[in-house]
Image 1 (cartoon, rainbow, N blue to C red):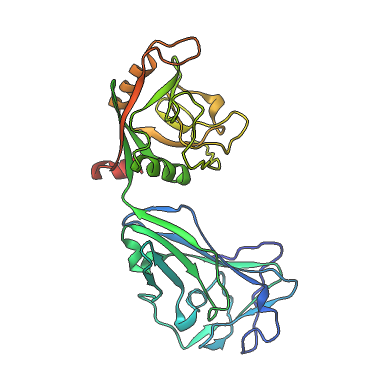
Image 2: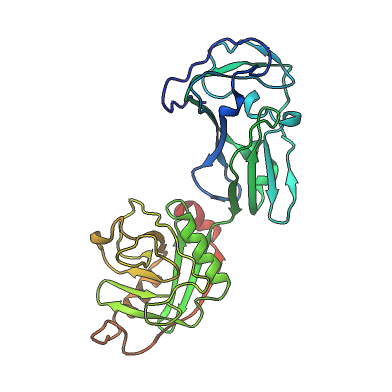
Length: 332
């Protein structure tokens, strides 16, 4: 548990019974956040529950339906406050088909709960593994979660969580195959974008249209010349990380003057390229020696003066598959 200070100290003092009684409860904001939108099936899903007082006055936090008791030096948001929604619920979890779950499992509401006072412009929060209380989140799927604490008086942002097995992309070319392992933590939106396009068959029979001998190849342009983007025009906000660009690194291509212009084209580096560090979004890595050997063959193809290959280098197919079980822990 933890207490997060926003602009001033988070002050917890004794408070009288009753809910907020004219203490401006409308100044409270509930927020959900997570480190990653993608979670591997069977792993914990850690979510931060935070309440923020945006006003210049202290606000009382009392759990409806319980007997208020003194806080007794509480640090962080108590579990009773997390599960303080209507009927002592916490999250509402919705599935991709419209199903909804709001019953907390493995939690028994107490008769009494600590009463807190949250200081001006302060926040208080708690991090929980929500799979302990919502077992449906242990299953593969796309889930939208929302938190409505204090009898539903507050309503948080929606948090999207994807639960699935680890995926990889198998790229088949006329010069061999390459396996790309995705870097979910560093670039979740770029990974999701590549998987989406691949499942649509977007990359099948496109080409690698540009070669920088010894350095990299570039492909995935629907026009075959580096000018194309996704048919729907979607571009991605950069997800830059500290991961270095080196042999086997897979980045999204973008316009030189716009870091948020990546769409569908990608680059595969065949050597260390430090000038690309934190300039391009790294979303994958080649998984094995066979993949690196294929990259070497592609980069060795003779080029024209503009960097385009003299022979067409087709991306015959790209397929999304599960990462083999024996490789999961090693890769993670």
